[in-house]
Image 1: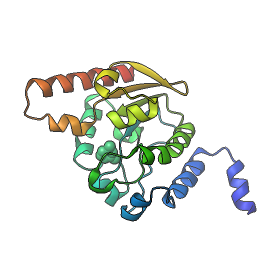
Image 2 (image 1 turned 180 degrees about the horizontal axis):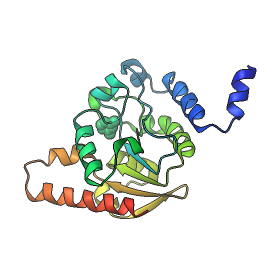
Image 3 (image 1 turned 60 degrees about the vertical axis):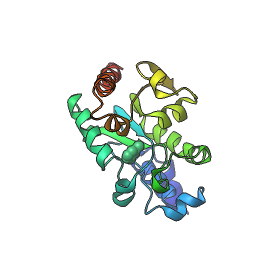
Length: 200
Ligand code: URA
């Protein structure tokens, strides 16, 4: 109708992000995810952030609360953000998948494919100055590569002209807890990746 058409034409990032979130709320492209999700998890943060973090998919806490990284991994992410001298509220945080995969299984290739246009539109509206991919799923998805995070981290790539840095997923770092040297190395490399991101 007229009202809808008029609002689409307005250059209003917030309104378009809201419309995109509404569209995703009704998404039924992945029958299993549509059947099992409590709600979709779109993303949180400023409309025009300098920094955008991309994770994998909502977990149980995120599915319940409707916000990315609010569970255990989110608590570690918050510590990483603070250690880098940043504030969570100034970063836009979202995921490759907007729905929780059952039992937090790894997203299927088809699910990533189905959800990708949403992520592309989200990033187009947000226009971040730098993107940080957290772990294998966003790294492989956004950069269209089969190469894993261990080899992808520590360098700067481009997504539609936007610099992209990749680092370990906080859940991976959590799994290394108590493992001495492996844990120390992963945390140091994550720290280096954060510094690299901040230089962009
Ligand atoms: N892990 C993710 O990758 N994303 C979330 O939102 C929460 C945990």
